[in-house]
Amino acid sequence: MKKRHQQKLVILSIALFILFNAPILLLFNSGQNFLGFPIIYGYIFIVWTLSVLSSFIIFKKFHE
Image (cartoon, rainbow, N blue to C red; front, side, top):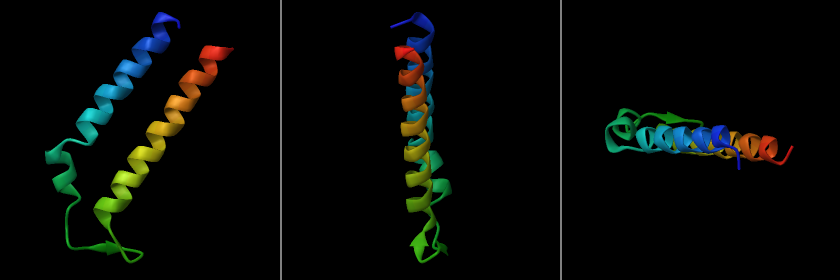
Protein backbone atom coordinates (compact mmCIF):
# COMPACT_ATOMS: atom_id res chain seq x y z
CA MET A 1 0.00 0.00 0.00
CA LYS A 2 1.34 3.41 -0.91
CA LYS A 3 2.27 5.84 1.82
CA ARG A 4 -0.34 8.40 0.73
CA HIS A 5 -3.14 5.81 0.96
CA GLN A 6 -2.01 4.93 4.46
CA GLN A 7 -1.97 8.62 5.35
CA LYS A 8 -5.50 9.07 4.04
CA LEU A 9 -6.72 6.14 6.14
CA VAL A 10 -5.02 7.55 9.24
CA ILE A 11 -6.64 10.94 8.63
CA LEU A 12 -10.01 9.23 8.15
CA SER A 13 -9.56 7.34 11.42
CA ILE A 14 -8.70 10.51 13.32
CA ALA A 15 -11.68 12.33 11.79
CA LEU A 16 -14.02 9.48 12.78
CA PHE A 17 -12.60 9.49 16.29
CA ILE A 18 -13.40 13.19 16.56
CA LEU A 19 -16.84 12.89 14.95
CA PHE A 20 -17.88 9.98 17.21
CA ASN A 21 -16.48 11.60 20.36
CA ALA A 22 -18.95 12.43 23.14
CA PRO A 23 -18.95 16.26 22.88
CA ILE A 24 -19.77 16.16 19.17
CA LEU A 25 -22.44 13.48 19.64
CA LEU A 26 -24.05 15.51 22.41
CA LEU A 27 -24.59 18.37 19.95
CA PHE A 28 -27.06 16.15 18.09
CA ASN A 29 -28.65 14.58 21.18
CA SER A 30 -31.78 16.69 21.32
CA GLY A 31 -35.44 15.87 21.67
CA GLN A 32 -36.16 16.82 18.06
CA ASN A 33 -37.10 14.26 15.45
CA PHE A 34 -36.51 14.15 11.72
CA LEU A 35 -38.84 11.85 9.79
CA GLY A 36 -39.81 10.21 13.07
CA PHE A 37 -36.24 9.36 14.13
CA PRO A 38 -34.04 11.21 16.62
CA ILE A 39 -31.48 13.48 14.96
CA ILE A 40 -28.56 11.64 16.58
CA TYR A 41 -29.47 8.46 14.68
CA GLY A 42 -29.37 10.35 11.40
CA TYR A 43 -26.02 11.91 12.29
CA ILE A 44 -24.46 8.56 13.19
CA PHE A 45 -25.83 6.90 10.05
CA ILE A 46 -24.65 9.72 7.75
CA VAL A 47 -21.15 9.83 9.26
CA TRP A 48 -20.89 6.04 9.07
CA THR A 49 -22.07 5.99 5.44
CA LEU A 50 -19.61 8.71 4.43
CA SER A 51 -16.76 6.88 6.15
CA VAL A 52 -17.58 3.64 4.34
CA LEU A 53 -17.76 5.43 0.99
CA SER A 54 -14.50 7.29 1.53
CA SER A 55 -12.75 4.08 2.63
CA PHE A 56 -14.07 2.36 -0.48
CA ILE A 57 -12.72 5.14 -2.70
CA ILE A 58 -9.30 5.01 -1.02
CA PHE A 59 -9.04 1.23 -1.39
CA LYS A 60 -10.36 1.34 -4.97
CA LYS A 61 -7.58 3.75 -5.93
CA PHE A 62 -5.11 1.49 -4.11
CA HIS A 63 -5.86 -1.39 -6.49
CA GLU A 64 -5.45 0.74 -9.61
